[in-house]
Length: 410
Image 1 (tube, rainbow, N blue to C red):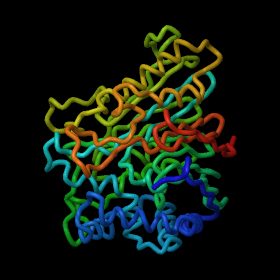
Image 2 (cartoon, rainbow, N blue to C red):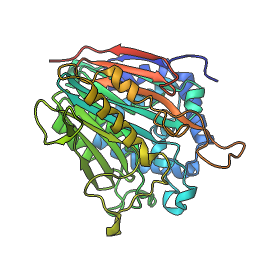
Image 3 (spheres, helix red, strand yellow):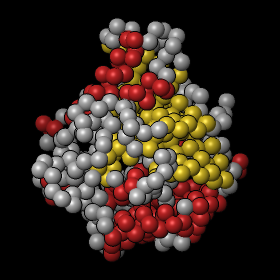
């Protein structure tokens, strides 16, 4: 069980393979432990089916979509002495755990992999962050990690990327030295697909990647527009929500579904908390949880409808929005909504235990002994203007924050 008040931080350098090798070597035992846990205990399909999907669909698609990430995953595998298929399993846990979603009654569906994300744009800069909710295993065993990656000049990538994720992953959220940041949360849709015919991809069922790997591709971009193209164009078979922003005061939330997406733009508010038109000196925000909220989404059409089982997702984003607007009203022009304020927003405990800042609980009544426990395993805020990452292990209203700084490029 956990004894540390904070998650481990490692630094990796070199080309993609060298960074992955260093990652694997530094976190070898933890990666082996997490791979075994997901293979033996996680609610994923039978291992032979997972191997089929990984070898014949995920790996070929990843090599084509992001050769840098592909080589880094190879390095992690060799550095940790963990089979490459198990490294992909760690990175595809989100995708593979959704295999029963369209065969399960909504009230029986698991919702342990949920998050609350937000970004704030104001006169002083851009911040983006999230509370990361998951089953408590990675918290209990210290299996999350902060990775500061320094790239090689010949790669022509951002010089530095700093990410938060599980050990063995390319990262689940992060920022880069070009001022791009990303956070993410789960989505479930009826069109999420698990049709993977043998022996391999067909025109009807092409090769796809685990959707989390598209997040890292965005962070590998120097240009915001190119990053958006890679997110929207990522070959995927399940839905997911990504919130992205740039220090140049643009942000967008993309509700990604297989082969398409919905877009949500920032809401601008004045000093009285009233919604206004976008303006250069204004303050704006986006908040999202785990169900579809884009203006263009309508389940009445019958083609696409949300498969989120309900629960706290239906109010967490509103709690965050409410707290952000409160700070906008309270803070006079020129002071902005600083990192400390956003940390406090993510400490919201309304409707506890199923709050924005969630303590361990089964998310069920009555409680059955042995049920899996879910919680906020980490809270993180990235300041894209000043290059800082603030992270708290566990529910932020109970935990301790640490801050890391990267050198930003001009």
